[in-house]
Image 1 (spheres, rainbow, N blue to C red):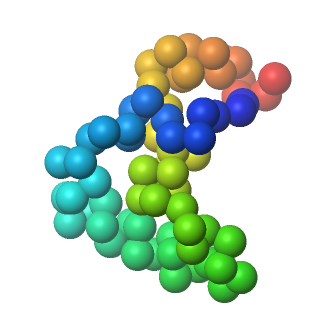
Image 2 (image 1 turned 90 degrees about the vertical axis):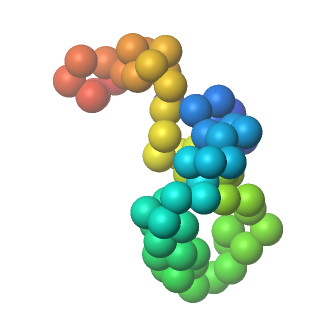
Length: 66
């Protein structure tokens, strides 16, 4: 399922991005980036692949297999 560069679920949500859990999650994601591919990406761009809106969730087939 293609995502927008910054998903609407995380775009402009600075309060959620500032939570300790999300900060730790982002730190872990960036730690796994051994080749530096995500170096220039913002925090919201990194999380956009994992957080979807209700509309995007409805578009996912029931079994998860298109």
